[in-house]
Amino acid sequence: MPESNQSALSEADRRRIHRRNFALVTLTVIFLFIFVGWFLYWIFWGRYEIYTDDAYVNGNMVQLMSQIQGTVTDITTDDTQLVKEGQVLIKFDPTDMQVALQHAEAALAETVRQVRKLFEDAQRAQADLILRKANLLKAELDVKRRQGLIGENAVSREEYQHYQTAAETARAEYNVALHNLISANALIVDTTIYTHPLVERAKANLKIAYLNLQRTVIVAPVTGYVAKRSVQVGQRIMVNTPMLAIVPLNATWVDANYKESQLLHLRIGQTVELYADAYPDVIYHGKIFGLNAGTGAAFSLLPPQNATGNWIKIVQRLPVRVSLDPDELKKRPLQLGLSMHVTTDVRNTKRQQSTQLYPIYTTHVYTNQLAQVDQLINTILQSSSSNISARMVRHG
Image (cartoon, one colour):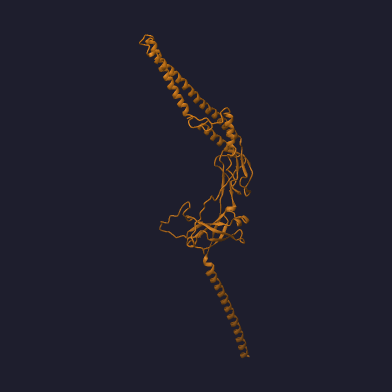
């Protein structure tokens, strides 16, 4: 009995050892496959990828600020709403600006009449000069005719002196008329009634008043979502007062903060894959657009001063701008501030430059603000000088 029990225990021990050895071999093979797989992945892909999760969505925040003083009467939008470029957002009470425009129109009409009088004064001075010149010639001829008659006692010396005095008076009057003509021409030289500096200044004042009236209606300069609305109905707004912001989510980008030890192989134009914590199943694609000119610490409000005895080195991070695929952003917009995971493919090590030969951002809502004012000015000019010839009269 003792020998059979010993042989049975030995058989059980052998089976247990066999199972243990099989498990160890299996684990070794599994770990070997994992290591080989990881090594192959690192050889062909892993060493060409640089990863960071210190990345956030960034974008433009277009602040709408008042260009004039006014009282808010209408607000047609609110936070989180999508607005289109050119859409009316806020309206001011236009009464003050309408009165200012009427005053500018009257000032332009009055200025045209004043300038017209300047041209009339110049013509009057011209005619007066011709008259004074004729009087001077007559007086000089009278003196000349009587000069030879003094010796023959046909004309008394006293009478001759009277004619000389009349000639001197005519000459003085001619000189005064000449200077009056020069002064009158100096006010209108090289100009016309419609291009006189006084009229041009009145035109400019009218355009300013017209623009101020247009600015009582505030439109969206870009397409985007409204944020940070602080304006209220009835509020008295001063110039340069922030009212709301518009965020165009179709033009966002990602600022990936890479460690300084990861910058060696980063190049502009390298492809990037990203995903957000908000959308873990969605992969975004982009390219490196540019590297910032300094680290976050260099541009902070209080830059670090490391000239101290207890200095501790801290690994710095450099913001790298990643431009995103606009088609993917259109399908799934990314809100500002979202966290991103960024992986950059650094196979392409050629140095490229991110150059822009055209405006990156532009708006057309302010292009035609003066579309109607020129027609208004022409109407005022024509009505204020209706009897002036269509041919501009020039004086020089």
